[in-house]
Picture (cartoon, rainbow, N blue to C red):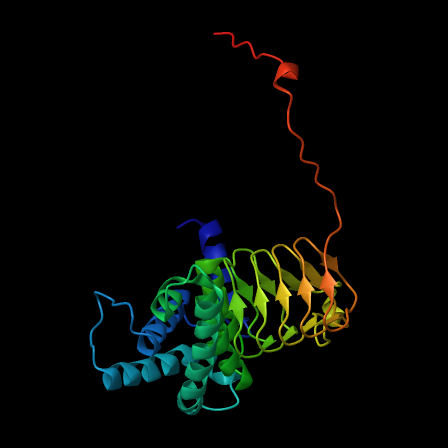
Amino acid sequence: MTSATNTFLDHLQTQRSQYRYKLPSRPDAGRFIDQLMRLLFPVTQDCRSISQHVEETYQNLHEQLVCLLYPLEKNLANSPELISERFFDQLPAIYDGLLFDAHAIADNDPAAVGIEEVVAVYPGFYAIAVYRIAHELLKQNVPLLPRMLTEYAHGQTGIDIHPGAQIGQSFFIDHGTGVVIGETTVIGNNVKIYQGVTLGATHVAKSMAQKKRHPTIENNVVIYANATILGGHTVVGHDSVIGGNVWLTSSVEAHSLVFNQHQTDVRLRSLESVEPINFVI
């Protein structure tokens, strides 16, 4: 090797000791999520599954989570084993919450043929499920891994939900591509949002990191495609409807209808006025 290569390798070796965190691999994190989803909702089958026995799969997932936590061990408040045990103690509650989400989609989307389709196919449900799993780990003060899990779902679905967001029951993301839900967003129960919706911040300065930067969406709100709602002080009151392409940076009262006022003219063409098109070959 050349001296330049040796210098570069020495630099990499030195850099290894300077990282504050060590993380599990992204493929391992993705496998954990997908196997956990198959445990909870066994409507799809993995041809490579080692075991079809629920208890054996459950224990294997427990061990996988411990393995995912080991690289972060020095940054954890408790041991990987205890965190994994506490997480799986909460799994029944997570599962019940996901059933509310699945039924919200199946009951409100005319295109849905049943729960099986929702849990197996709908990207919105998948992104919500991964968020709820990651959020539980974040509640146990696990750093970085929750974000790794939701970013895995982001890559799979195009839906970006920060694990720090607080989201109530029966949440429905329809279509979903391009949805962004920021870290300090608070969403109530029975909320429905469409593709391209952003629940974001008005400021991105690092000094705002510990402050509420994202909006609050109260119960029974519908937010249509490509609406953008920004700001930590922005509250969308319950039972409101936010129309497509709305840009909102201030609060609205309950039962509000907010829409983008524009005019679209539709006219019949006069065929006699249409210029012929000459193609030159």
